[in-house]
Image (tube, rainbow over the protein chains, first blue to last red):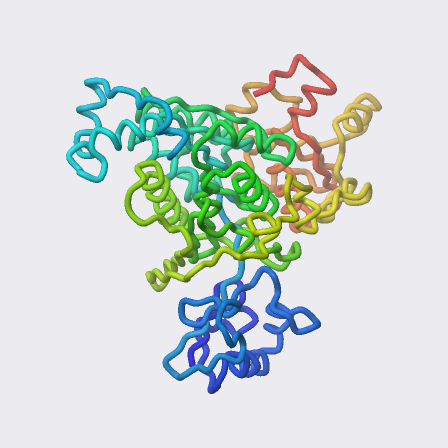
Amino acid sequence: MNILIPTPLRPYAGGQQTLQVEAATVGEALSALTGAHPELRTHLFTPEGRLRAFVNLYLNEDDIRYLPDKENTHVTAADSLSIIPSIAGGLAV
Amino acid sequence: MATTLQTALPELTTDDLSRYSRHLILPEVGMEGQQKLKAARVLLIGAGGLGSPLAFYLAAAGVGTLGLVDFDVVDASNLQRQIIHSTRDVGRKKLDSAAEKLIALNPALNVVKHEIMLSSANALDILADYDIVADGTDNFPTRYLVNDACVLLGKPNVYGSIFRFEGQASVFATRQGPCYRCLYPEPPPPGLVPSCAEGGVLGILPGLVGVIQATEAIKLILGNGEPLIGRLLLVDALAMRFRELKLRKNPECPVCGAHPTVTRLIDYQQFCGIKPETAQEKALKNGIPQMTVKELKQRIDAGDDLFILDVREPFEHQIGNIGGKLIPQNDVPRRLGEIDREREIVVHCKSGGRSQRIAEYLHQSGYANVSNLVGGIVAWAEQIDPGVPKY
């Protein structure tokens, strides 16, 4: 499946915009991602392994928090997983 | 807008009829819609990148009252994206610069200037006077403050955020929809997410996102179309791709959930992990000693040999100066020869922001003894010499 990496996290994913991983579930996809790019792990998860409160994960257009099977949701090669962190641009100084 | 509809809508003048004729012939706007726009009161948080297109389009569309919250002055580095300000406005208050452009565009507009840093102490009072709030802030504490205040007051929050080439937009805090905290319960710790000042931003991006915010504000006023409630619009300017994600109202949201734990405004600096400056940090910022105006006065009176460098623009120097050598900030790199490396240098500007950056630059360029004048010439006028005009 495709994992879409947002701009602020690209430096921790080898500068890549999208990554392809082989996975059967959302959880496996995340393991594959953080296995290949360990630096991403600290940005996405707390030391206890919980998704950080300023990051959201979307399977296609749905927040995985609200999927019935959450991280265990089955995925196919056609699905996309998006990482959506909070950003704070605007008037900028 | 319930608050608008309860009162009688204002009549349109003959000038209004010709100015808004392209709106009036749209069935979705029409006379009543234009009257709703005229009655509407929209508050823009920030007169910068997002605020510029927002303010321009809302003023042009005939929104009757626009409140602007900003306490910043126009800097040359703003002009790449903050199109409401012009080159001649550098050094002016953003509020004055923006209000002038908006009134030129639409003289019937009522612009309310709030020259203040939005805080827990004043946010509810300021927001209460408006129907809709449009958030164009660049920092997390203000973003959470605006969100929470909107939820507590029941005001829709038209949200936009940008970073480099990416933007987000949504409509939060409507009665039925989610709020910003449903999406992001907590902010990232300081330093993990770079700001625009550090990470850069494509100048056009706030235009794109700000225009989306303006569109949403207009739709909310008209009560027409499908606002971005419960949807997060993602803009990728580099790929020129728009995506949309579903947002849900979180039943456990600390502000808008069934059992809220946040029922009044909190300390958002603390919430965002920003600690007050320690005495040591106050004395030294990014390796640059911070000199107060009182110290400078003492040093001058003691006859110490100081090279005072004024990095403001020539017109600011004309308004008032403390006898420093004038080299506008952008000229400093090619005029280093005029700054004596052997002497102790004190850099100042209007309020201490530009001078800090130049002090850092000089330090990096090998100047050993450079300090920044905290609070700039404004602090000097306030604390040392009231004869120096403030501007």
